[in-house]
Amino acid sequence: MAADRRLDVLRAIVSDYVETREPVGSRTLVERHQLGVSPATIRNDMAALEEAGYIAQPHTSAGRIPTDAGYRVFVDHLASLRPLQPPERRAIESFLSASVDLDDAVSRTVRLLAQLTHQVAVVQYPSLRRSALRHLELVPLGADRMLVVMITDSGRVEQRTLTVPSAGAAHDATATTALDEGVVADLRARLNAAAAGRRMPQLAVALAAVGDEVEPRLAPLVEALAAVVGETLLEEVEDRIVMAGTANLARSGFDFAHTISPVLEALEEQVVLMRLLAEMAADADALRQEHGEVAVRIGAENRHTGLAETSVVAAPYGGEGSGDALAFLGVLGPTRMDYPGTMAAVRAVARYLSRIVTP
Image (cartoon, rainbow, N blue to C red; front, side, top):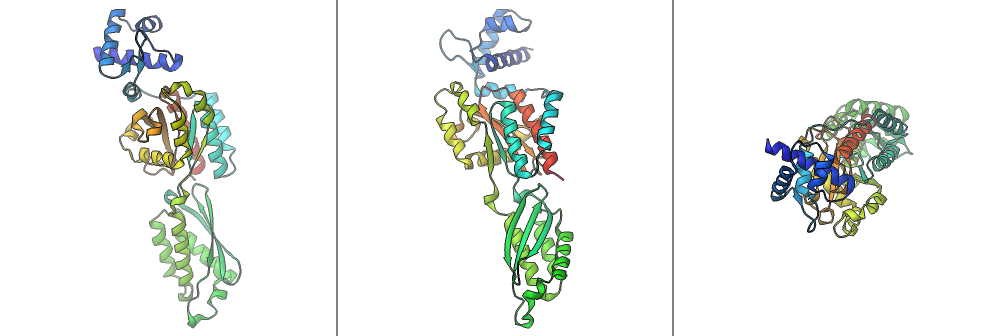
């Protein structure tokens, strides 16, 4: 019973501090919250919470503020996330559904998240390594060159130019024959039938199998095409992120004990954020929460020193679950954050973006 009441006291302290930015005292809790106990009992509960490391006194004769551990308990004990209001949901759906392509969808998403949460928004581009091939287009560029266009299930388009390989001396006109319109059309159809909807490594196996079905003189071309597609979908350099709302962080500067400079420096190093999102994606414990797979890292849980005074709320998008997700999106801000509202917004936007990028 006492533990439940102390959790209620902690919830009240977190809510008041997030709203007012002022340390919370026992008198404030009595006046603003119907906790059903005497002021003396509340003071005892606050003393117990402080001893447990969930709240702290910033200076003498002040009220209490939540610690990172206190925020963690608060987040972990959220019974459910309040749904967004119907006007908010309609606005999200309308804004994102107007996207014309993947780049536009990502741009709209990051701006929308920053506006909804008043934090720094981060959207990771769908990784080609986690994407499935939707369509492969072959465009002859002459006697010995070909444009290979790969369209993934997330709407991403990649282009590569391929030099058509020779089949050897026995077929001295192979390059010209291989690029004959009819041959290219047949090859295109075979490759798409075999590879459409597949991800690596199944994709590599499917493409290689086509080489066994075509005429021997076309086998080197199929092998080259399979190599180009495979190399493209495995490229590390395709992992990148887009940010918006850095000005929101600057306006929250007084929420940091020292300075926001380390945070801004970390944001400039996009590799830091990409590594953080990758860690959150791999963190099974963080994704076991009953909040639609919304993961939260608070304060020192972020393993980069520049982010020690920030919290990150992230969610996967583009798949049925974190293991199948194409990428992550989320927000970053000071630990004094509206966690329920931020988590609900991140979850909702991730779901709407998933509808756009998942066929």
